[in-house]
Structures are given as structure tokens and as C-alpha cells.
Length: 112
Image (cartoon, rainbow, N blue to C red; front, side, top):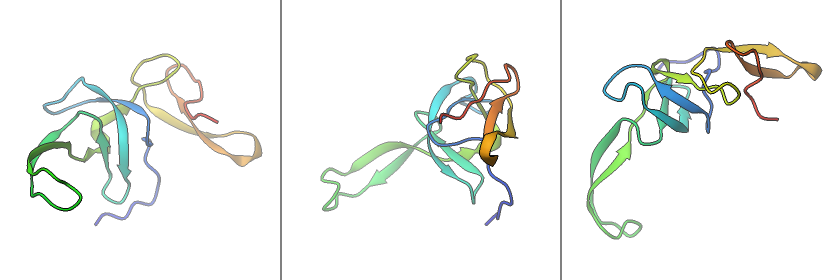
């Protein structure tokens, strides 16, 4: 397992655009972030088929489709202010709080 020393630029509930692969250009919401693996799970992107056996919790078995993790380097955050895919910078604001900001429009991305 890859042990990361710094945080990812992508967080849960961010809107991201896919930069490469079969889903290039698609936009989606980040459902989960896996920082130890350097991966993210994006809604309706990188769908895989899973053969599911019926259990007590899952009544009906069969082939189900679900999202698979993709590398965080293949996604780019879409700025909620300017609406463009952008690189993310980090800066310290009042009280020493670290926030993310858009490198294109210089506005803060994080919600308070």
C-alpha cells in the first residue's frame, strides 16, 4: 500500500471531470475518497459489473453495475464559481485554517 504524506486535492462531494481513459470528458460527483490508495470513486464513471449472490441483506442476486475506483491524478476539480476544470491551490486564511482555491478565478472552493 502506498502511504501518502500529503492530502489529495479532491474531496467528497466535489464535482470533477475525467481527464483520460474511456470516460474522458465526463463529469461526476465524488462519492468516496481512498487516500491510502490515491484513488477516488466518481458517480456513474468507470462502471464495472459484479456478480452478486443473494444474501440476507441483498434479496436478489445477479449481475449488478457499480462504480470502481480510479486514480485521483485522472480527475480534475471543477470550480463551483467559474464552472471550469482547474488546478487547486492551498492557502491559509484567518485563524490558520487551510482552504483550497481555484487557480483560474482565484476564488475559494471550500464551503464554510
